[in-house]
Structures are given as C-alpha cells and as structure tokens.
Image 1 (cartoon, rainbow, N blue to C red):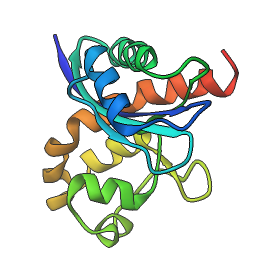
Image 2: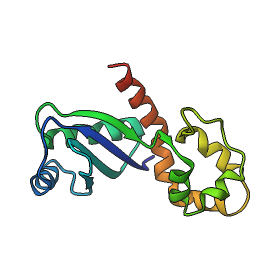
Image 3: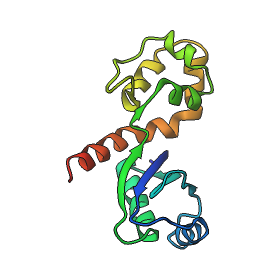
Image 4: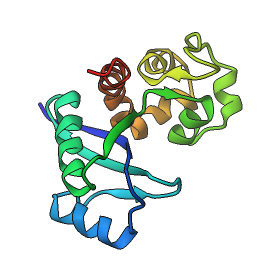
Length: 158
C-alpha cells in the first residue's frame, strides 16, 4: 500500500549555490516537485511530497536524488519533521498554538521541542477541531518516524 509522505531535507554545501542553476539541476535529477529554500548561507532546504510504501526508503531515495544535484562535498544535515515546536504543529493543522497548549501533549524532548512522531497519538485522542485537522497533515506526520531514525543515524555519524 502506498502512502504520501511530506518532508523537508536540509543540506550543507561547501559553496554558495546560485538558485537558478540549483533548480535546473534538481529538475534534471527528477526533483521537479521540489520547493527550495536558500535563506541561510551554504544551507539548502528542499521540501518534497512523495508517495511510496515505506517512509525511510522514500526519504532515502529523495536524498540521493537531491545529492546528485548538489555540489560535491554537500551533506545531509537534517530531515524534518522530527523535532517540532507547537507553532510548527499548529501551522500544519491550521489551528492556533494556544489550541494545542490547552491539550494534553507528550513531554518535550529538547528545549520545548517535541518529537513529531510522539505528538500524533496525543492529537488523535483530542476532541474537536484539532483532531479534525489531522487529515490535512497526515503526510507530514507519516514521515516523522523515518525522519527521526535518519536524524539519529546522522547524529551518530552512521
């Protein structure tokens, strides 16, 4: 069974990248669906929505595609969603952060950030608008456990 996964990839690059050439290279690599961000020097953010059977395989394939479009020496730094703020979750659900603060949530993992993979079960048990909004964020939450695993391997240098 195929599932839709929505995720962001953050790469460090050894040089500044010109936006037009990056967009062309991503298109050639099969990432014509990518939304690209170049806001921070030598960091590239790529947002993708992909369909597949297993999130980790889907994300790993996307990483390979994007890496083929980036300069040599580039490295994956992070896969999102993993650690998220209540504001991140609220934006995905199109509800206020205060609406989430009123709900039971898992304990934060790091400095007020939550594991997206741990937030979903809590939200599914909530009544009303918050639970009703989960359908629009399904692909984002579906990618979260794989993002967490990949980030753990990255932090261990694996």
